[in-house]
Length: 82
Length: 334
Image 1: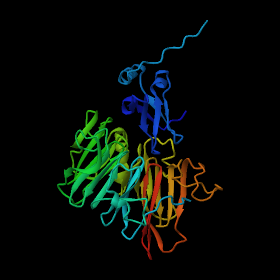
Image 2: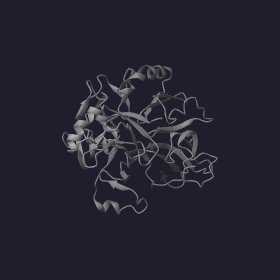
Image 3: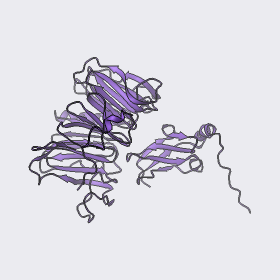
Image 4: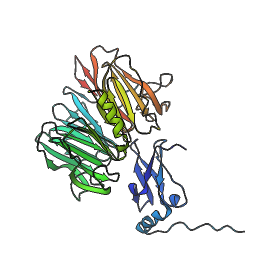
């Protein structure tokens, strides 16, 4: 998958209310991705107004401070019945 | 072809157009400043009703000599020699110390020398060139302002040790030329410093302009490009126009060149119609059929059939292209 750019998570803006990281897109809108999606391993933030995407550079442990800021917890693993 | 979506008509010639994420500032040769879009500044509502011709545009009070826009902020120089900023600046780009939102333009520096003073801005950074010294504030996440890197620099600090003659700024970098014609880069663009110098040494008429993530140079009617190009931002390299390029500029991720004062070509990322549609498209002029997302060098506007019209400048914003046209028998048009 070809992405427009790579962006470190510390350079993105986190909104504790929406639980979303955003970053300016050259179209004027903002790339966005939910913290839970990042926690689940997704690293591609998309722009709702165009086809561009960015790859978010992060480690899973980087997310803990943002969960604390939002007063929330990472999603619990889904147990699968045998 | 591009069908103009927004126009500005004036007897005073527009000399600079600078765009933020969702707004545009337009500076006229008489010092008047207008803005349009999702405005980062609040102005007296009386100003809105004063201009029946350009209703989309709101005049910013005051007289100015330069203007530049970042993602959500404006930097300008007043005719009295004061650098002012306004808008939103979470990373310190307002240069107003702790202030992160200013709905009016506020002073941040009194110029030492008005001659040649300029402002530059991109994304989360503001730069001021005053008395041949380059100053900057805002994000320092890639050491674009100084070493070591840091998240925020809230007031103007000196960026260059040497006297600086010209500057271009991108999302997280700045390039500048010193008085000895040496080119310098800070931020990720530092890896292209030697290439820039090599091309600059080959031609005295060397010009630099920046998209968000790259630099384009123009010298001897040839363009060079510095950075990876995922959206054909480098399509202009090795392209030969049949007539001289008379003006050129860059937007967030696209380029614009005017040839022979008549034809305007665009290239690079054109998803929002900012590079025009491709010639084989069957949709009506002005309709973005998404046929030209990553654009080769593409004829976007042609004034050849209008003998009294001359394209004298072009500017780029966030997925927007601006064409300045002088009419012999009327007035300036954007």
